[in-house]
Length: 350
Image 1: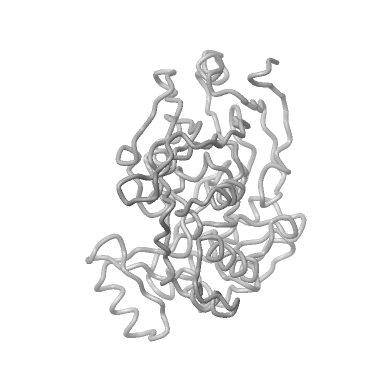
Image 2: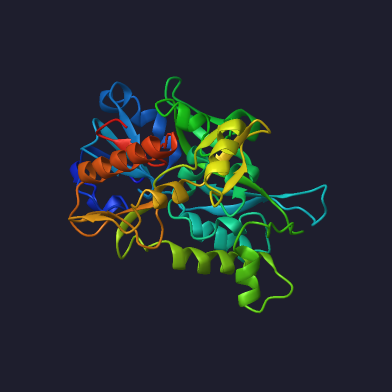
C-alpha cells in the first residue's frame, strides 16, 4: 500500500454498484494518483489479466463476479486551466479528475458561472465514466462539451491526452467504450462558456421552467428544472437499486420508423444519427408491452419509468439480466425492434 494506491483482496462490490447486487472482486485497486498506473500495470495481475474500471457503479450490472482486478480511480481535483472572457471566441477549460462525482462537477461549474453541463444535472456516476458512455439527457450529450480526455493506454503503459475528435463520440458510445481493455480514463477537460446558449427545446424543460415561474432562464435554473424532472421520473438509487435507463433508445432506418409510426400514431420518433435514421422511444415500446411496474420477487421495472430496471432489495444481477432479456424479446416480437442495454454487463453476455 502507498499513498498513490491501495489494494484489497476479495473485496465486496455490493455498495459500489447502484443496483446494489452482490458481487466480489478478487483484487480491488483504488488509485489516488494516475501517475502510479504505469507501475501498477507492470504487475502481472493487471498486466496480463482482465481489468474492470469501476466508477460510481451506476452504469454496470454485475450478473456475476468480475474476472481479474477491479480498478477504481479516486482523485477529486477540479480546476480551471484556461479562463475565457465570455466571448464566442474563447471558452473556459475545466479539468476534472475521473473520481469526481458527476453531479458535483455540474454544480461546481454552475457555481463558477459556467454554462454547458446544465442539462446533464443529477446523472449518477463519476467524471471518468462520462466520456466512455457519452452520457446524455434532455437534448445534450457530454461529448458536445468535452475538450480532451486524459487516459492511460494499457498496451503502451503511457498516459495520453486525446482531443474530442479522437474520442469518436456517438450516441451512448465512444472510442473508450469500444476498446475497454485499451484505455483507463484518468481526467476530462470540458470546454464551457460564460455566455450561455441554453437548450430548452427538449420535451418537459420549458414546461418545468414555466411551473417554476421562471421567465428568464439561467443555466442554474435549467439545471434545477432538470433535477426536478429527474427526481419525479426516476427512482433514487439510494432508496431502490437501479442504474437509470437500462435500454438505449433504438436507432432504426427511416422507412422502418415511418412504418411503425403509421401503425402506432403515439410512438415518439426523433431524428437519428443522420437524415436516413430515426430514434425511437424505448420507454414507449416497453410500456406498450406491459412491463412498466412489473415485479418478479425483488427484480422489477419502475412504476414511474419503463426504461428503469430496479432491485427492490435482494435481486441478483442474474435475475435482473434475465428480466431485461425477456423485455427485449417481447419488444422485438411485437415491434420488430432490437433493444440494447446501456449498462455494461459483467459476468455474462447480453
